[in-house]
Image (tube, rainbow over all chains, first blue to last red; front, side):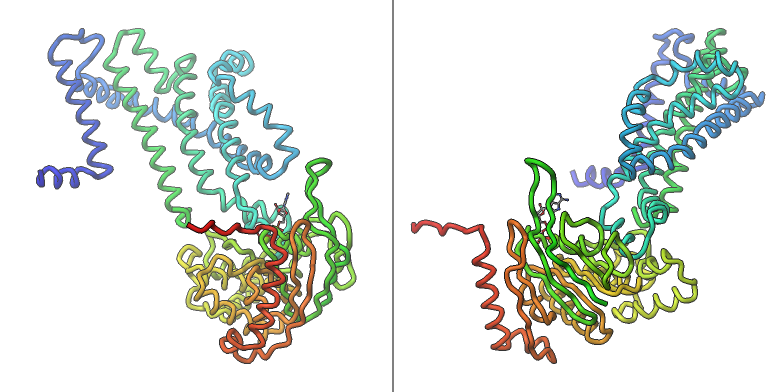
Length: 258
Length: 261
Ligand SMILES: Nc1ncnc2c1ncn2[C@@H]1O[C@H](COP(=O)(O)OP(=O)(O)OP(=O)(O)O)[C@@H](O)[C@H]1O
Ligand SMILES: [Mg+2]
């Protein structure tokens, strides 16, 4: 009894339990694959997936694909972050702008971004621009609305204090509102990054010369499930890494809010 | 500095939802005076202060500052709120400096004045700390220093010690009174604590609710050499009791006593 309580306490650590969860899945996967009850074509073994992944990596294909996908995400998402910040602040702080745009954005938000792919291809062809734009429009409105909400919850005392110390409207937006919402903005960026990362894969599945999504759709054509698995894991790992980077930036820049 | 309110009325809402909150409020504050506004919750004290600060407009009546009508907020009317309103991402020093940087003062002057006002409130050692690392009383002292540093002609204090516990409150009252005494600032203090008002203010306006109006004004000429002694001074207690009776009479909420068992 006492021993198991001690064990629990040692296991009760964010990293330990997380790694344990992943290990359990890997073991179960290995057991099923080794039992031979599922066709290798449908369920490759962990070792097989690792081999497929390494082969792609050694050929330099994996890196090229990852760079292509990450580049598109960075382009589209940087644009989205850049536009959503002033737009969200404007909507959150100005009733007229908010009333003008909120219904519109509320509507567009419910149009699935991937459904814009055909239009984007018609307008901009098969190059990089439509993919970057897809990520941009697919995340802009989520970011904007979350920033708008954060602005609306800035305590009135903070704004009014600045007013009674001689602050002008623009100063208050840049020097009170923006720093106050910074933690929530970074968090919104982090959460919606997941959508950006999803969208780039979807866009590449539809049409691309390279990229992680493109490689998956090629692997499908040759029934290479091991490669599909390997690429899925890579996609997950890159996403996780980006998530961690956002958390790190938040912790570094907004010490006061943690 | 001369601040005057003449027949100020304030109604929130329109039509059926309209609610008159202030009814013909008139009073003045002259340079160097310490005036208090006392009333029960909901009597419109904060509304009066917000109108003076320019954060809200009166429905009718005039508010003049040195003869000119108030059109909006400005740094000549500093404000201290009951709720802690320091900027949580700024150190105590940056909070104090904030108003001056908004006004575009040169960096050197900002630094000097920040140091000076932190010293005035006795917090020079806490300069580098974040608000959350300060006690409630220290936070309010920073808030007062911040308002002072922005160079106001009149300080508007809206229940600045309302959220503090009794002991800290008494020492903060002492602090504010000494500050006023030393620096010759002009102050309007809002409180629902009669003792607090009488302790510091030479003039106390009593407000009644529904709608908010001034029902009585007392010129409290007391010997304020020793506030601790004043708290238990006979004449002080008499005046306080008299005003407390007046306030009780105004209170519309009466509590029915429990029936005997
Ligand atoms: N923006 C507003 N819209 C509608 N009603 C308001 C508004 N501001 C204040 N009121 C009403 O005006 C009345 C007086 O409010 P006010 O805050 O001035 O009272 P107060 O004397 O400061 O009370 P307290 O001691 O609780 O702070 C209250 O009934 C309040 O509900
Ligand atoms: Mg109030």
